[in-house]
Amino acid sequence: MPEPIIQMRDVWFSFNGQPVLQEVNLHVPRGDFLVVIGPNGGGKTTLLKLMLGLLYPTRGTVAVFGEPPHRVSHRIGYVPQNVHINKDFPVSVLDVVLMGRLRTGRGWSRHTRQDRVAAQQALEQMQLWGCRDRRIGKLSGGQLQRVFIARALVSGPEVLFLDEAMASIDAQGRGEFYDILKELNRTVTIVAASHDMMILSRQVKSVACVNRELHHHDSGEITQEMLDEAYHCPVDLVAHGIPHRVLGLHADKKEDE
Image (cartoon, rainbow, N blue to C red):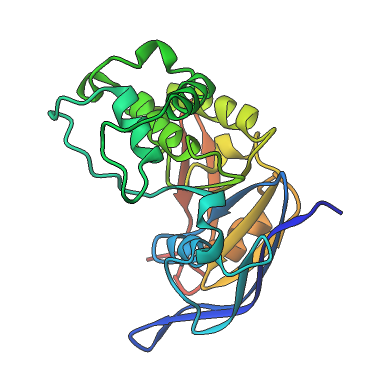
């Protein structure tokens, strides 16, 4: 069995006395590509933040590489859901990626040759080395998202967390984006929270359905049963070139309403 990267045991989390997650048990092996799906407010981002050590469980334990997450933060990469950056600021793609190598006590201009080699490798992984001198304000949404991933990769993480990383990417760009993630997954474990289920189902290795409770499936295929578990109401996947979802009637709705 592959080495476990993340282990969650009987994890509960409440906010202002209201339960957000309950009885979560999860085992993520090394090399996995796990996608976390579920409705807005179902607890996807909270789940990721518990794994990252940005939140602490009300009950239960979370371990990453066998340690509390905050002790192994140097082995973790993270791209949050909303990365706020001023596109008018005169900063290059390379400068943004090098931000991932900043350390306490080191000035902005004190990047080493090793830092620059790491930045080049990360940009090459994201197929952006040719854009290294371009201003970030000139990038497409997909290119900018890949820059943020390169910034997370530049420190050499063993596991990468992505929270709705494809939300600002158009339909065509998402396919290319996931091809890059698939290649990256050869060396890095990936945990991604996403609504983009139709494209992800071709790439991922396992799925976690989250809506307060968590249901884990050791398969990248998303089935109707899994959607019912996550959304607690009928959900149909319909494809006409662009992936989207259509919600059916809830069980408590009358047909004639």
